[in-house]
Amino acid sequence: MAVWQRSFGVVVIVLLFGLALPGVSPSVAQVSEPGPDPVQLSMSSAGLVMLETPIRFVDTRGLGSPIHVRSPLGPGGVIDVPIGGFAGIPLGAVAAVVNVTGLNATEMTDVRVYPSGVGIPTVSLFNPAPGQVTANSTVVGLADGSFDVRNAGGSIDVIVDVMGFQRAPTSGNQAFDRTIIIGGSGSPEANGSMLIGAVSAANTVASASDPWLIKVEPGRYELGASTTGITLEDGVHIEGSGQAATIVTCTCADSLVQSSGDNQIADVTLENQEQGDTIGPPGGMGLRIDSGSTLLLTRTSVIGVGDLVLDNRGTATVSDSEIVNRSSSFFGADGIVNAEGAEITLLNSTITNDASSATIRNYGHATVRGSVVETTGWPAGTAVANEATGTARISNSEVRSIGGQGILGNQGAVIIDNSLLRNTSTSFQASGVSNRDGTLELRNSTVSNAGFSGVSNFSLDSTATATIHNSVVDGEFTAVENGAGANISVFGSALTSIFEAGFVNAAGGTATVVDSSIDATDPVDGLVVCVAVSYVNPNSFNENVCP
Image (cartoon, rainbow, N blue to C red; front, side, top):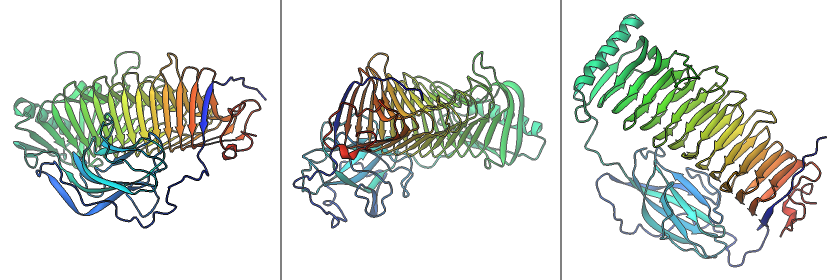
């Protein structure tokens, strides 16, 4: 058996399992409806909807049937509470009326509520103490339909009830200056010519203030071989008759559709059959969104076999859609590329890539919610590659590598919450979540890697920082690795592996493990992080790891 030599750096382990905490009530089952009536709210009545019955979105005690299942908050713990798109609340809601209750606090703390992903506010919502049930109501802004609840210290249960929401300002229903209907009963080539003509006509007169809708009836629309199939100028929108009914294809060297303004595309399949060229600039794209442009893509399939399927340089929202790259390229063919300075939001969608590259490559700001991101490309396929300039938020989603190399690689800043991340490849090179000189937060999630490590945190310039809250991390050889110069904190989590060790901290690495369990079924001799470390409660560990 090969023996891997490792040295260990600074490790601080604090365990709270089984400790009697004075002043904490052993039962709070009697708390069913939290808090006082809502306080006076500073919210415009325009677009305000107050619910007849509050909706319980979170109850970390595990009681009842809340919309989201969350674990109690540890020190510095944050839970993401998506409400847009749930329980009849629209995706476009911009604010919420909420009542938050704190109970079972283990120490004096403060709880703060704020839009997801923004800076932590300086004012707390309330300051609970052990043995108290504390509640308060507030209006909180929403970021992509979601807000965060943060606990400062100790452990605490929280209950979140939503009592109302505010819609985005609107001037009324979408109205079109003109609608063009394109029939699909002709040949694919004839249908394609009609579509090109309709787009060309609309481009000359439409604008953001006078939008045109092109309604495309069932049929196949072949745009032929060209550089770009169609370009949508400002105020031109396309609506098909369903993904299976309206199919637009081309063999386009650049892209099938180029969005050059404020555009919407819905209920259609877009397929570019151009294979592209991985050596030169990206080609064979399904969609390109220009810088300064805005695209809303709804209930649409975008399929390609080229270098890239969706190239976003502006602002894109993809809802209830699928983005698929069927390229067999050994390298260099991505699914989605989100450029530096660009913003993309993926809601309830599926993004897959068969090529040996990234399914999502992010240089800008990316939000993934309620979606599936998958790579099947070996040897270098990665589901998410967040580059050094990228910031990403992944919530309530599944990110998976089916035969690819890795689940997620981060060099920027990533927050992952309430998600499943898994790699089914058993290769020794297969990675889970890799953080290199970036910032990683993993909350209320599960990472499972059948290959090497579950989470790897390593640094070339001593800037890698990772935090794991209330999560499960499973790696075949190592659950969590922390490299020299890197910093990692683990709170209320379970780290498990079969071989080597549940947790490895290299010389020069700094690690803090609080209220967590570490387990290795068959550890290699001398490669356990527990050696020469003193624990408050060593019985919390598997005896093979901490004899």
